[in-house]
Image 1 (cartoon, rainbow, N blue to C red):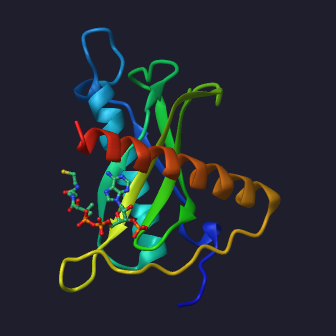
Image 2 (image 1 turned 120 degrees about the horizontal axis):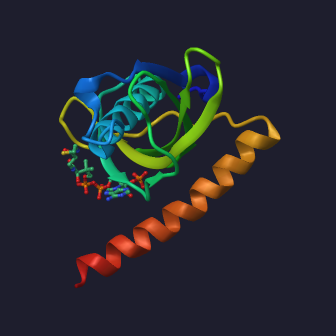
Length: 159
Ligand SMILES: CC(C)(COP(=O)(O)OP(=O)(O)OC[C@H]1O[C@@H](n2cnc3c(N)ncnc32)[C@H](O)[C@@H]1OP(=O)(O)O)[C@@H](O)C(=O)NCCC(=O)NCCS
C-alpha cells in the first residue's frame, strides 16, 4: 500500500453555533462539540483509509473556553500516526468571531479509529508519510500516547 501524506486527509470543518446547539448559558453543549469532533476526525480517518472506520477511543478532551452562540466553530482534524489497523487523529477546535475574525482555541482531542474490511473485521491501513519535522513530532507523540492508552486499556480489562 502506498503511504499517504497527512495533508491528503486533513479536514477543516466549520459550523455556525446556533441556539439549538446551546445550553442555558448560551454556549454549545459539550456533547455537541464532541459530536462535531468525532465527525471531523472520522472524515480525516476515512480519507486516509479509503475504508469504513469506527471510533475505538477518544482520549482526554479538554474544553479550554466556551463556544458561544453566533460564533463559527472551526474543527481542524489531522492524522497523527498510523499503526496497523488503527490510527490516531488529532482535532483542534477553535472559535472565530464572524464580526472581527478573532480566533480562540477552545478544545483539543485525540481519537483512535479502526479501519474495517469487507468482513467487518479490523484491516491493515496504508502507512503515513510524515515528512516535515512537525509531522514527525506529531507522529512520535502519538506513538507515546498509544502505548499509554493500550496500557490503561489492559489495566481496566483486568479490573
Ligand atoms: C474497535 C474494534 C473494531 C476493535 O476490535 P477488536 O476485535 O478489539 O480488534 P483488535 O483487538 O484486533 O484491535 C484492532 C486495533 O484496534 C486497536 N484498538 C482496539 N481497541 C482500542 C481502544 N480502546 N483504544 C485504542 N486502540 C484500540 C488495537 O490496538 C488494534 O490496533 P492496531 O491493529 O493498529 O495494532 C471493536 O472493539 C469495535 O467494533 N468497537 C465498537 C466501535 C464502535 O461502535 N464505535 C462507535 C462508538 S459507539
